[in-house]
Amino acid sequence: MSPDLTTPEPATAPAKKKITRDDIESKLRELRGEVDEEVEAVKMPAIAIAVGVAVATVVVAYWFGRRRGRKRQTVLEIRRI
Image (tube, rainbow, N blue to C red; front, side, top):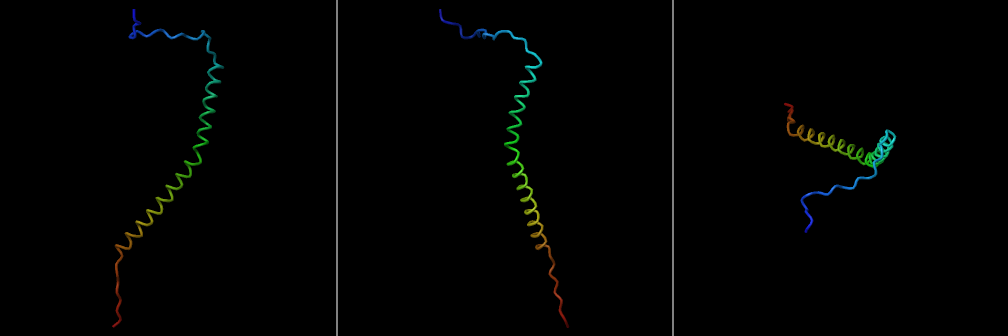
């Protein structure tokens, strides 16, 4: 007879070991260490990108303001009689 593929077989469970508070704390410390390493690796490039975007925004705002000022500038002619 062919095996029935629709019914899942129970997974073999590891030996039943009581999970203690120390086990949970050690695992959380391990995970936090990994996350802290990743954050440190990404922090410097992220700061550099943020500074670059801020400088570019200020330059573009200055350029558009200067352009608008030149367009709206009145030309005043003074003649001596």
